[in-house]
Image (tube, rainbow, N blue to C red; front, side, top):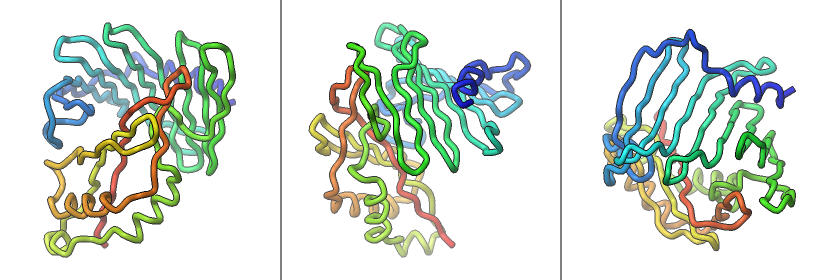
Length: 247
């Protein structure tokens, strides 16, 4: 059933969905808006929002080479409200490298990777995750996470640890400051932290950033490195929010 749904979802852009707004946004090396975070101007993003709330964006290098494009929407599948995203990533010459399809819901998450319109990886998470990657030599590698991104050694353990050590700065409470502090962490091939950066340092309160920096300096839980489509470990960035909410 879900295989059929994915085939239909790849064609979800309707001819009747006329764009209502279109904006151009300068991005840094992490594809983060310069208006919210520091860094160099490396990419430009064109974003369109259609009348039916479907979003489309394209990201270009400063030389005008297409780097990434995405279409996203909110849908109902088996009675569950889910978000759907189709993301295409291109190589340095502007040729399509691979396509990533993702469905996110409360009950389940599902990701598929396609190369030349052929599925080479599929993973489904309903509490635990299970899936596979087909390597270039035809070997089928079983996986229990999205291996194309670095991750914490154990996400649940990190979440519990964070709740124990994170405190809400008093100065932030007094000002009514809240929000998500987005962190980018570069993880090498052996799973070691190379560096981390705050992605949205221009759009959240400094006291919240200081608290995240304090906490991250204490983290010793480790990471799992990302892999490429050949199954080789690679150095890559992961991104995650640290949330601060009042009330």
